[in-house]
Image (cartoon, rainbow, N blue to C red; front, side, top):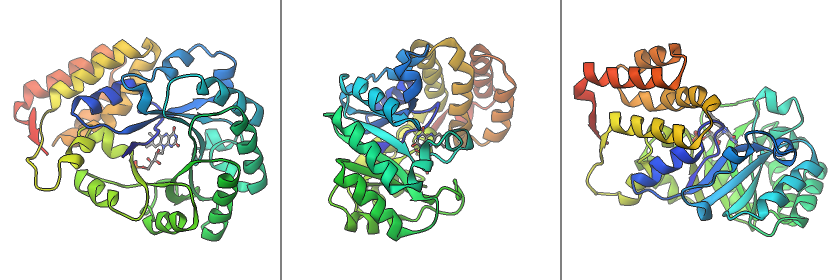
Length: 312
Ligand SMILES: Cc1cc2nc3c(=O)[nH]c(=O)nc-3n(C[C@H](O)[C@H](O)[C@H](O)COP(=O)(O)O)c2cc1C
């Protein structure tokens, strides 16, 4: 089971929450800019924090420049980690505009050369996370991934949507099965897993691993719960305490400049566990700092004490 790489979400505070519930996973980091890493950007030490379980952390790199990606991967290769991943799936305009993310999927030749270059400096497990592609063309996806495999990629994670689909429609897990059947390397499927039951069900499919993103932010206990299923007791969660614990860890592990956007991002998913969650999200979004977010969060449970403890 894998935690998906998610910008502003897949960092130490979330990993500690997940581990705290007793759920272990392999944790992809949020994407790290290869350029900023190589140039020693001011925030890189925060991005590189791989606690609390460095041996189960996969660093994800994003970038468009092959030399910088190779240099950044070689730097990461010296750190304790479970592997290094290259982002070839991000379809956010800010990323694709630069030629990074899913733009790599536009040329099999360029992507193959990139892997060859990166591979030279990396001894650890090298993986790629991607989408179906710029077009809905399975035959192209298979040729693309076979080339990555030839150049030394050891694992592929597929979010089975095209670049244009972004998050629309449903993830097409049949594409994960098709890719798995066509490759020698392990294939991890990802997309739209909603809860522990679905995670467990997907984990039994004809692929080598399952990756969960947004649902693991809503329910950081999802991995623990999936491991205990089927037929085990439900998990009882103190939602207020979990939110406070997240805020406390955020303050401990991230620079102050990151606190506001990262706490908003986390609560934009975590509030889905609450009856008045949408209302609460609006209140939180109006706050200007972490202390304000904490005050609103505590205040919610003073008014709605019945929501504090919930069973999942
Ligand atoms: C807020 C957010 C940030 C994301 N950032 C990244 C990223 O940094 N790298 C990446 O490869 N994918 C990123 N993704 C995509 C996820 O890794 C994943 O493929 C997608 O959310 C589908 O999985 P899910 O339905 O389980 O959330 C991001 C998704 C979200 C919602």
